[in-house]
Length: 266
Image 1: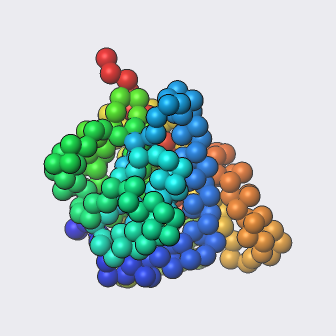
Image 2: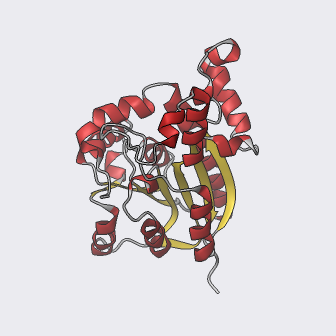
């Protein structure tokens, strides 16, 4: 397996991930979680902007929002097509020149950041990246190198348990019994997702503390019949937000979002 670059399907990615209600739910949950952490951070550091790095930022919606709010934002993605779209969106918001842009694999980012004399970051976002990497654990080592003590990592990743659960509901038993099943190359279903327990072990090994956990799309994708409240997008988002932080429902989310804090310096 090699790390995935979405240049070849960037338009499909934009439409599939963010073109409908799924994308609105995703952004609503992540936005709420980020704002919760940032509010606490700003109460502690009221006189300065938060230094934010978004690894694998894709279309950069949340990074752009943070730049509009006055934070110091650095954006990275391996896909030139995705970052071109992100730059255009940032330009429309008047913050393109306020954002530092790096089109490269995250493995090459450290050199670029050092060349620019970039200091460490207070907040690092890594959303929907782990499941597309050949060696996903390594990105956490990168994060640890570039995150200040007491800084936070916003880590969002595909939940393989949701893949199993949804296919059980849909009756796709043959697919689940096929150990060799692989999604096609144009699919946005990753073939190598990482289990929550494994991610938690990686964070534990670094001494990070999970301060918040949420599920993204904890019921929307499972509701084949869009009746009652499920036919009302605003109501769906409201209920997704409500149950996204409640166990056991959050663990059924198609994606899991963890906010993990780096330990203080000894």
